Length: 361
Picture 1 (cartoon, rainbow, N blue to C red):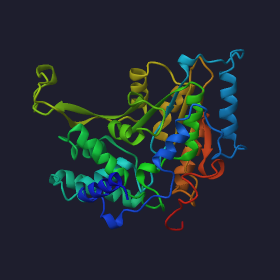
Picture 2 (tube, rainbow, N blue to C red):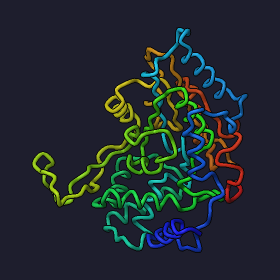
Picture 3 (cartoon, one colour):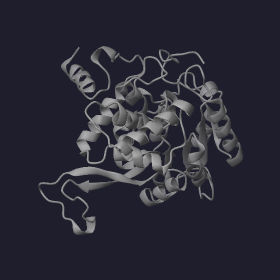
Picture 4 (cartoon, rainbow, N blue to C red):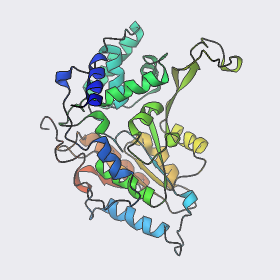
């Protein structure tokens, strides 16, 4: 074992992310291998896709059309904008719930180096109960406030390192997979394909923006400033309760995390895209009805030919899909005209052949 790997495992143990004996090597695609799939100027041959699937045919046909200068549907490079939800669209959200929810539960209830307030402990217990009873509940502002509270006061580098260490924990419910490696291989190919066709890709997530930046770093051709997510306030360490308009950042200061600001779901996603992108996307990818506004914004009243896709969690053998959730999203796709992407039928693999459900359905 090399020195860098050993240091990583020791740090994980110190933070309470498991003992050295409990940390196992992943047999899924490593983060370096994921990067080779998506950060690839030549694009992809879509080896992880069923090329007879409707979603594959629709996407590739669309791309040939809008990149052809002779087509009436040609889209100039500067207007080729694609937006992706994160959890459940690019990465697993069922281990057994969102990455940030599981990290919140760990921080408040399991981290031996942190003592939460009684309110934070009770909030985390409610989140844990919701996760255990229904797996992936619908996020709310109250839950986001609770998640942000346990990290308030933490420095930026400290928080980034905490996220990195939690990425090393096993993806619960699946074998041979770490949380930080649980990206969907077929969707990595989509991102690569778009980048090769000169699309600018944005991740528009309901999860904490900085956590998503850390998880995505080096995995996809997406700059950190192209990641939009739930936001918190950032403060100077010496600022206290002083209004930001009345406080000057000094040499002795550092930036720390504050409390929750806004949850990036539904219409809030559209508001953020208008503010931070400044252009209407022409491709949208999501996996839940909380992405409805984002997906509809891409296709409704667009001056360009535009498509939106909905990832359906219908695989119960290679993934932790939910028939109820899959049906709900399929109905939304049919209602609004989004193109369905079936995990079960459209993808040849999800994480790699060595990753399977740890328990039968």
